[in-house]
Image (cartoon, rainbow, N blue to C red):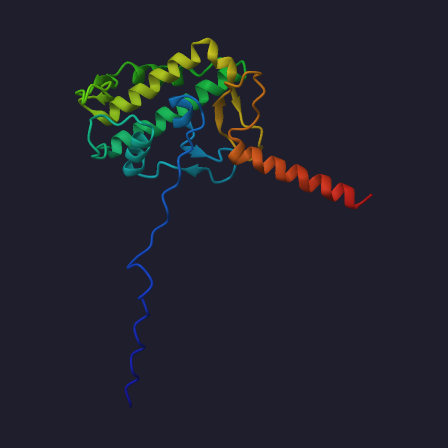
Length: 218
């Protein structure tokens, strides 16, 4: 029986040795660290919410991009699986706590206890770097445990927001497909969208198309 020659190997000249899904982008449009942290779970109203913290490395990346990175170097924050589990639980407790207050409901005591517990842990300490050339010394964060300290800082921000007057300015994006919360710091307090670059433009396009269809049927 003659041997069938093996097929040639695939051409990989123009392809990388392997490809991976791109890391999800973090929205930093909430106006407060705690609201930006809550936004790491997107599309909450859908059947498949978008988890932007799928693993410890994603949490480390969020901490760095949120400027909550302890130290004056570029080394990534060390985050453990336990830190990730704690972060997700804290995130959902913060979300429920803020939403309950927005809706005029009493928050769940378990959520209050979780946020208070996280806020009571050592947080990031601001430090002044050594001055260079007479310029103002830059700030950086210091912590013995950078990952948990960053989460404690987020929790404290959530406590201050939920227990202060600015909570009345927290809104949900009016795009029904968007679940992001934001602090309305506009002068007239009429902000409707999490961002004009995101949902605001989508609404404008949808409105234009709706008016065009209506005009074409007249």
